[in-house]
Length: 436
Image (cartoon, rainbow, N blue to C red; front, side, top):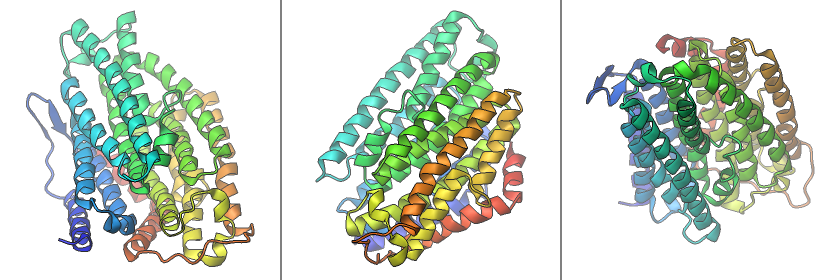
């Protein structure tokens, strides 16, 4: 079967999979609660399904040209399957196995540009960082089982206390999550892996992988480690501030669009942690809502940048100067995506960050919310720097007119509509809150 036909079939199946996610779902558990599902978990999985479908559309031009498209989709769907098991995991064994299933295929995907040395380097850094975080996680799991005699998420809360050993366990598990989410100071692999991977893989890492890890991280803190809330709250606050500040400072210095979006995504994780710090239903709703917005915003930025890079090979922000003169459609998509990531009204990103800050403020630590709000202001500088280059600066050799693949254009329009409408349609947040 030719790539074009296979791609169309895969896109159709991914769309049907997303639509089917709204019907005939049942809550329940299997294998002594090793695997469980709820309405909220089903919704979170379907948000990831939407992102997967959009990725198949956005990078259609690259996918149809690659020799190994079937293998790429097999790896990507395997990784998503691992993420689905991860979100539904009910004990530490299921959790660890799911995490490995979600991680190993992504490392292979990072090396998909087989003729580029930088792609192999990205895969190696991904494998090494994942192996390190998995080792830390396993050590934490062994301490939990050795001290409590259980690996069940339902039994663990009653056995946890604030002893030094339990605090060490929490730190180990928190560190494993921090690696996967690129929380400072465990973020050092992120920019190099993003830069070396193909755009499709970078997008997957940025939105699908981070979204899944954020969902299970939130559930683990709120349910399993609820008795140790004071300890992990302090960890969240300190690392959230560090993540926002470091992500913003390093994003200011980037010239490569992939590295720019990598540090942007690190800063966004800091804001997600603000919502998590609330330990409330509002926190769950705001984080889930924000990740939905983040999928539209980040995929729009990556999709437009990939369309430019695939035809010109240009990935530097300076190359985008004067882009509006030759490519108004792509220029407006990038601007809208960056406005949303910066949290500028009336885009959905503004409402997403507003709900995160509101949820975080419920804990009463107002100085923390003030620092987060100040970081939003700092982020405006580097997001608007790109917009200024596109619309206001001149380029002696501007990027020529880009021929955007119809699937890519359709996906970019969906993302743009999502960025605008999610902020204006208040029922979306209410719909998410019903499941919480």
